[in-house]
Length: 86
View (cartoon, rainbow, N blue to C red):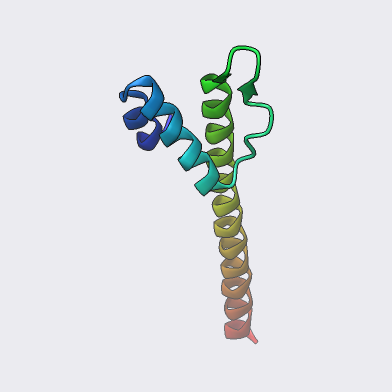
């Protein structure tokens, strides 16, 4: 769980739900299906799960970029090493 979620979970219920919804919207999470009309409440655990999944996805996307850059760098180093011998 990220620091942002841990800090938010310490707040009282109404403020916590509001902050979680704001953070989810900022990340681009879908909030469809997290509101229960019968009980007139938001499913807090579902919002948190969606936030965690979105954060993980963003981290993985950044790692993919780093991996690609590393591979390109390795190829460039190999090519420059071959140029030294020829």
